[in-house]
Image (cartoon, rainbow, N blue to C red; front, side, top):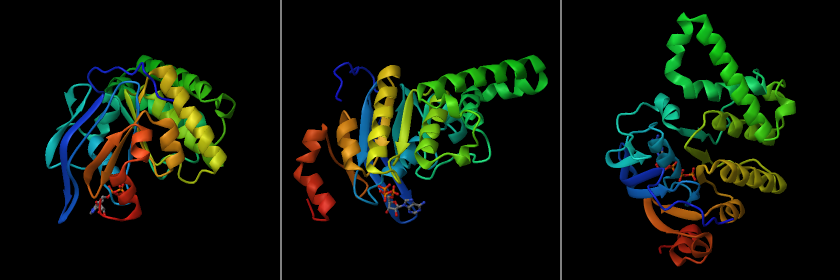
Length: 263
Ligand SMILES: Nc1ncnc2c1ncn2[C@@H]1O[C@H](COP(=O)(O)OP(=O)(O)OP(=O)(O)O)[C@@H](O)[C@H]1O
């Protein structure tokens, strides 16, 4: 699925020499990673490699002690987590972050609401803005549900959907925010083999239609190898390797890290 149309210009996400420390634990030491426009970049590594910590640093859930992270050329230092979505960063979580008693449409509308962020204040004081906001988010959510093949499920309670469809809905909610980059944290967890394949096709279709940049953290190697254009490998909180799926598969240091041997 590698795509030669990926732009070589400024990466959408560019992290340089990022370090994160939790008390005495050095979770990340000088890691660097970039994601280009329209690219699916995989981030892999054995348990404890620092993948989730990197995602948390890139969404400002944790602070990094040194280094820099740029989004479309804008530094993220000082940006609050709640403002990340407005800057064009959407993510999904290992444990689904859905509102079970709300409908599918309402869940997805939340994504579009988040993108509008600062317009809420205006909406409170002006009924016209409330109606316009409601119409905008409803239309946006409806269009995204059509895109992911869930239009007929819009009125269902989100909690009543089978797990793979809840995951699909979570992606729809992220897309409703019109992100520049989508960060997926272990999306294949809990899916069967067939469901993983379907999920991969969904993500690849979204990337192609929207020329969206995606950072995929995943332990399911079949999905990573078939979906990613490029893969970055972390080990013990450091960069270990980077390359195409074929290069990573045959990289001795990567194989040693996964087998628990010193490279
Ligand atoms: N909030 C925290 N407080 C203390 N240590 C943490 C915290 N979060 C992560 N760590 C430590 O930082 C290191 C990196 O963890 P992280 O969860 O980022 O790895 P990971 O590659 O995502 O692992 P996994 O594949 O198991 O999810 C580990 O040693 C972990 O124990």
